[in-house]
Image (tube, rainbow over all chains, first blue to last red):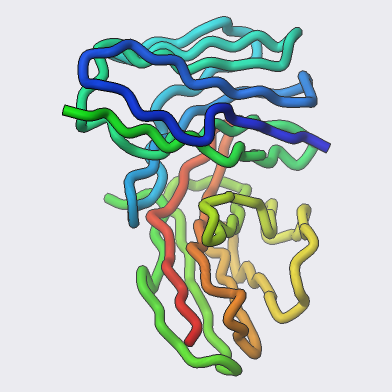
Length: 112
Length: 110
């Protein structure tokens, strides 16, 4: 059964810093790995989706990588801004029923 | 145009009541899901339907009963609500390994 872990659980950085969020998964037979953002009291915003055949995806200041062999994904945020403050969730899609298994999230605070 | 829509967005109800959350998708997808996000923000799948057939039923109390009248709808009915049912419930649909989430329904049981 797929298990997804995110480290750290919380992270606080000064504005302008580059940072990395980590995600690990136990079952390498994933179809894709997806990163979401969730603001307090809000729904899920999809940030990046990496297919199992891909190594990375980029969108603006965000870059996500996927290493299936080691069961790891990272989300790199460049030049962080206070507006980046949110909870970031990673999720792996796997299984015959195509279900998403979520990590417990990293709560990011970017200090002005 | 909202792809996956859920109603109501907010629901406050008393213990013991029965309530339903409705979900509709206009994407033509075959597969729909219900996920629950608990007070610790952990998201976990509850149910999945494919072409109106149940394909995932995680360990969920049988007070929770999903109903899919057609491919575009997956409703969640909850009987005898308990305080621990307070959570955010997300509906989703998928096609070719891409999942689209609704905006969530905040359920508070008092």
